[in-house]
Image 1 (cartoon, rainbow, N blue to C red):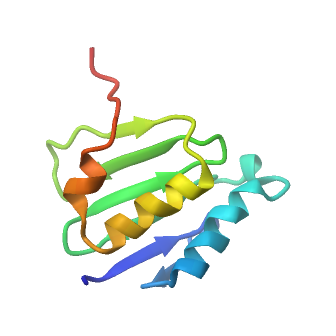
Image 2 (cartoon, helix red, strand yellow; image 1 turned 90 degrees about the vertical axis):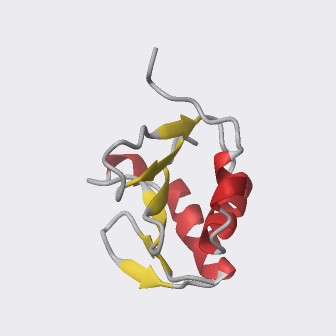
Length: 109
């Protein structure tokens, strides 16, 4: 299990949070005013690989690698909080191939 961290909508990071903490962070997206936050998303980064999953209040999830300048960000819409938690748990365990096998979309034509 590698290092991973989450970042909340206030920019506060937590190293290796439990699944319960991840759930709380995802649930914070449903708080009043979540859409108006400066950074309305919450994210989990798998530190050794650079892969990141950001979850937005609207149910959009983005999957990208900040360490790879050639990476093309992917996204999904309509993701439930439970599905987002499942994705985060997979990424936190370093199961990048499982996360990557999901039906991601890109903005490329």
